[in-house]
Amino acid sequence: MKDSHLVIEAGRTEKQYWKDLWRYRELFYFLAWRDILVRYKQTAIGIVWALIRPFLTMVVFTVVFGQLAKLPSQGAPYPILVFSAMLPWQFFANSLSECSNSLISNANLISKVYFPRLVVPTSAVVVSFVDFLISGMILLGLMAWYNFVPSWRILTLPLFIAIAFAASMGAGLWLASLNVKYRDFRYIVPFIVQFGLYISPVGFSSSIVPEQWRLLYSLNPMVGVIDGFRWAILGGESKLYLPGFYLSIGIVMLIFVTGIWYFRKMERTFADVI
Image 1: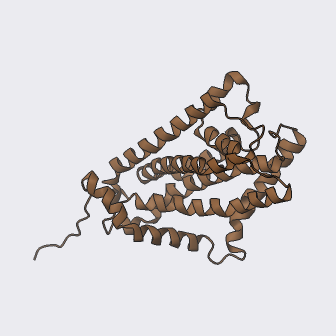
Image 2 (image 1 turned 135 degrees about the vertical axis):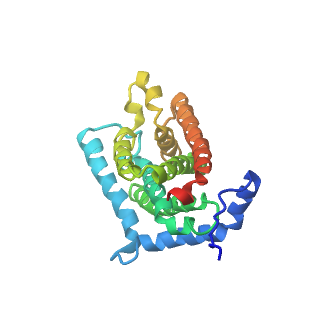
Image 3 (image 1 turned 60 degrees about the horizontal axis):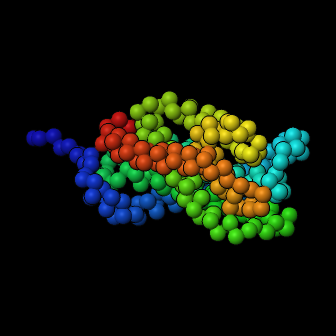
């Protein structure tokens, strides 16, 4: 009697793979909706947790940098300056945390059936994007409180949201792939998120960075993303440092493209290693 074996298809041609992403869209919806429900299940205040954390962080940064350090606010109320950066940063940080563990937490599914593995980290980024949209309510509330009316630049915000999505997706794919092979990354990711918060212009404007260091500072891809959000939301005195912005966006695109490349390269081994 021959042994029966379960065969997992490791990969398909590139053309078929991208078609499969569309074919398995219902799985994508299921994973995203499941994660949204699980995140706030059995919590007393539910989805309000998505508002509390960025709001409290904004309050702390406003007090420390706005009230105590008296840093410039680019002509806008300091809470709005901070929160216009908190939105893309929280989206990016949440995506890194969710993506890095997404393949591990879905190990049973990955080891049993074929589907494009790209569905898993993408659904994790979408869950973080839902939190991003919810947190946006705080920004609207702040604008109403301070009677702050954005300029025409707010129409360009979807472009910067797309750039933030690319940064989150690219970095998330790298960490998701590396975490399968090197489980140390479960401890490294929280450090990356915490350290990144301090070296990114979240609590302050990047305009305070000395001119000779701004291009070097823009090697942090989130500098360009955050500056883009502030330029679109604040208007007025807010300006883009174009050389640094282009450098940051170039790095975002590099991370995004190489993230997909590395994920696809490692994808064949996920079912065996995981």
